[in-house]
Image (cartoon, rainbow, N blue to C red; front, side, top):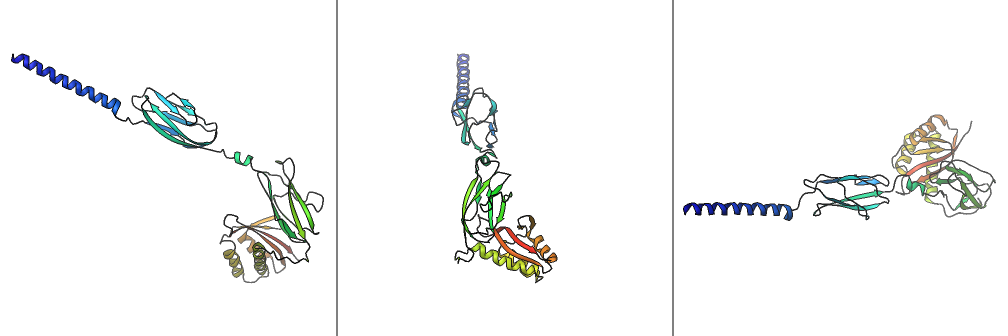
Length: 296
């Protein structure tokens, strides 16, 4: 009798253990969230470059990769290239239950935005007879052919050009490049020199002030006083600002001023100074264009 009771107890214990094991397996399998060990790289790419995806989740035998644009894959690892730019969410589902999400940003490929950039002319709408005017070509081209409408011929082949009109009137400026089928056009009105002009802008006033200080340097007047005045007031203390002389020669501002001091010998005449102000800050000058003559 006692032996039978003992055996029954053993069976009960074994049954309880089996139930616990089964319950633990059920909880582990169905009620807990398994950590998905997967990766997607890189997360920020240019168009045309594939992302590499892979999963190493323990016990995984079924995968569903959703790339956020309707495309899917059921492999454990591989590569995928997005056909369009944009921001996408990749979702991986492992064994039909466990998920992990990734964000991928697909950018425009460098150079593609340049291909869509149009060639433009940056120049004022008006000027004065005999005044030096800056014409700048903007765009990806390497060859530039300017016709300013006064001579009937190609007047310059540089990207940035200084030109003055001898005769007042209304002119159509034409710029041709290897990337344009037809010339880009810009209309400018040149007023007679004797007309009163009350539209003197800040850039002109700054140019005249700098012209005066450069002439002082050329005339062997105190170098530091005039140099530091321009540097602090207009160049944001950047001594590497480019100086273009007579539309051909270039120097950094410091070297130009030193050369002007040493070689000017009081015979260099600063005729005009044009300033190119940084459009982002509206303050710092990023380039000086100087017209000068050297009298023997």
